[in-house]
Length: 155
Image 1 (tube, rainbow, N blue to C red):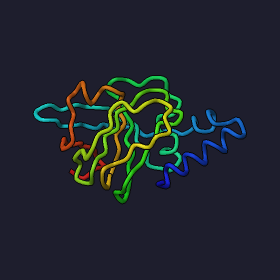
Image 2 (tube, helix red, strand yellow):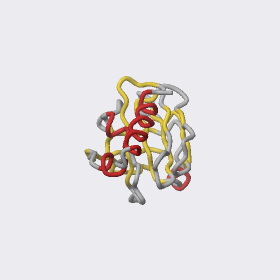
Image 3 (tube, helix red, strand yellow):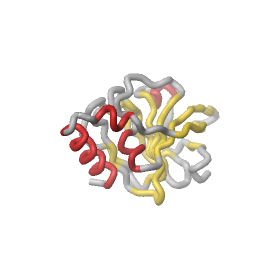
């Protein structure tokens, strides 16, 4: 189990035990920035919230009941590493795009089930994970090998 998953488990259990899970985690804020996915000739732009800190990664998109179609969350890992995520206390289905250090999508998990504690893993070292609304990958025909452009991912 990776550190993020273990930390999410511990924080959630402790917060739930004292009855503060929602309010404590809801206080975390995120910087927003632009991100582009290049798939063939198409360029798809998103406004993403960036998760860098342990607290931001722990909260992620938990407790959100909706997200704009052109929005997402970008989790950054330095150094790149094997990543395992889950949908605990996440209310909306998500597509997870695991991104290598070169900015290419390594693997994709579509329509992760809300509330699931099953882990979703990268197929290798990931520099980032991009979470988008469930169904976005199919709608835009995104695939492994497509390029993700963001100021904090090498391109």
